[in-house]
Image (cartoon, rainbow, N blue to C red):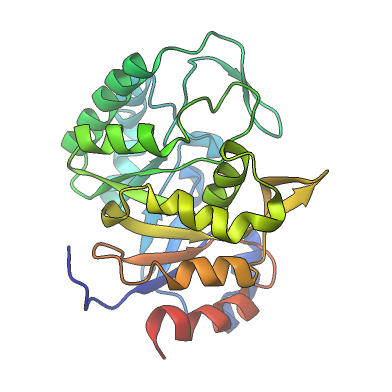
Length: 274
């Protein structure tokens, strides 16, 4: 890609709220991002879309390459992807343990592996996906939460090491996730999240960013959490402005179910210069 003059595109995540608002927002939207494989059947033929997750909306675990191979070899997956070919396949950049129990934040019930083993297993999964897929593959940075499920995977050093080892893989940069990780890993107060996030982002391989997710985290019990995908604030807009010239950036995707129309109107002139 690597074309700084390429027109950035604006996307929005698929949801029932999106469908309700579609008549009013369709002129603003270039990309509809799909997280749940079942939603692909509802896609309109003229929609462009990205495929980000697996069955029932669960993100696959890069630590389990055999499970990833099995999943993407399922006839259901292959049939849908062949019939409605996506532009990109992206997965969460995690996790350090193989077995989790679901909660507000999933938490591990098996022991975390070491960093080196995680890099090797993640790389095996990504090697398979880049060979399997005819479209770009990206990994999405996660939001650090201190329950054991996010140890080291949100650290810039780990992200850099993984992408240095996997040259054909892009980074899907989630701004809200970066805000949470920056504050938590830096032991900062949420009020300082703008400057703290900028410092965190400076440590990431931003030249590999192909897509950006944007929404706002929630402040709960004086702790930032990305659990509700709230409407964007001035903080996210300020962060985004400094990222729009990234050489491989293609899509800025609004990941929010509230005030979709109002947010897209704000993002259009920023992203598209119109």
